[in-house]
Amino acid sequence: MVSRERVLDALLELTAGPMPTIRDDLLREALHTALPLVQAEGVTLVTVHHGRLEQRTRTVRGELEARPASRHGRELARVLLQRNRPLRVADAALDPRLEVEDGCPEVEAGPAVFVPLRCREHAPGYLAAFRRRGAAPFTPADARQLVLLAAWTALALENMRLASNVEKLAVTDDLTQVYNYRFLKTALRRELRRAARFEQELALIMLDVDNLKSYNDRNGHLRGSELLRELAALMMGQVRSFDLIAKYGGDEFTLILPQTGLEGAMVVAERMRRTVAEHAFALCEAGGITISLGAATFPRDAEEGLSLIRCADQALYLAKQRGRNLALSYRDVAERAGALR
Image (tube, rainbow, N blue to C red; front, top):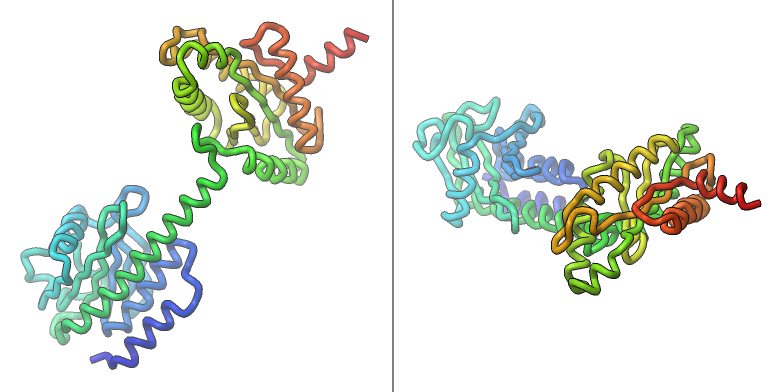
């Protein structure tokens, strides 16, 4: 039986240092603590990750790779949560409530104890410990110790989720759920440094909704906000996973397209223009809402972030002057300036 001092030492060691900020590290720490805490030969931790049930295992021989948990595992987690107390079994292989997949790899079925893992706003999971057949059964004290560890693990997972949400809120526009201007400035500096380091091109596109004011006047600002949200979703469907879309102003957006020259930028801009023009927004026929776009490239048009934005904005302004629902580049601005001389 584990002494009370040893239990306290294990829990104090777990909580004394900074809480892990990486999910894998957190779960690994929980398993590492559980194994000696109840003198088990194997421990498993079943959690939901990206919508799928995942099982992590550690035995006296070391940690095993994470793998999908059994379908029965989800039902077992639900039952444990409903019981609201640990489940101790004398022999995991003989208990009718368990399946073979609920056991611990590399540990012959024997005494086991399961405790629920309560994760707010997530499907439940569980923490389980196993001993080989013929070993002493787990005691109520063992179960209570695992309950404490499961509570710490669930709290740490919840704190990690909340921290991730706070971080997302800090860089996301509330209305459209694309990045905000604050993040845009940071991301643009980072991408320009990367483009310069690898001698790659980078394109920046500014776009503006042509006739949002008249739409708002007819239908109200609430409808206008819904339109911007729908427009942002449309744009997200027209770019690559590593491209970036950010809200720049009231009805202006900025796109950062890494590894993209002028020709590629104009293909994206024209595709976006056409997609919006052909889309029927609420209370508006297709073509009733359009966008104008201006593109500039690094290093051809500018080598610094604000200068690149300024070039793209000048191209956008020219597109507005020429009748809207148009995509132009800073090259068009330069050619126009040359023709006026």
